[in-house]
Amino acid sequence: MITITKKAAEEISLSTHNPENQGLTIRFAADQTDEGFQYLMGFDDRHDGDIHLESNGVEYILAYEQKVLLEGMVVDFDQIQAGEDYSFVFMNPNDPDYTQPEEIHAPAKS
Picture 1 (cartoon, rainbow, N blue to C red):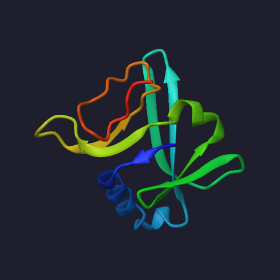
Picture 2 (picture 1 turned 90 degrees about the vertical axis):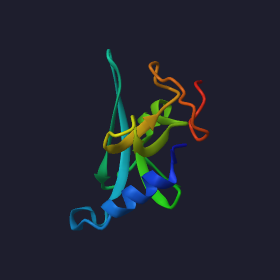
Picture 3 (picture 1 turned 180 degrees about the vertical axis):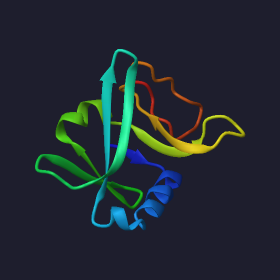
């Protein structure tokens, strides 16, 4: 469903140590707008109808309605350009603006 790279999994795991996140699961979502996809992630309670999965040791959830938007996405934690801060990177072949990067773990455009 969603692949969380090792670097992203390590960063998410660090966030689970925050007392505010105890007992919560990381949730992924996307909003499809005229400007393209906007990605959302944060810790949340599991709700009826959520899809509950695991990747690289990280349990995650998404709303069933989000499946079509997020299926095949890779979440990484990296620099977009050398010298910039690290951030979460969402590589989603379902996004019309997606361009496949050269990295081996990036998904192919659908």
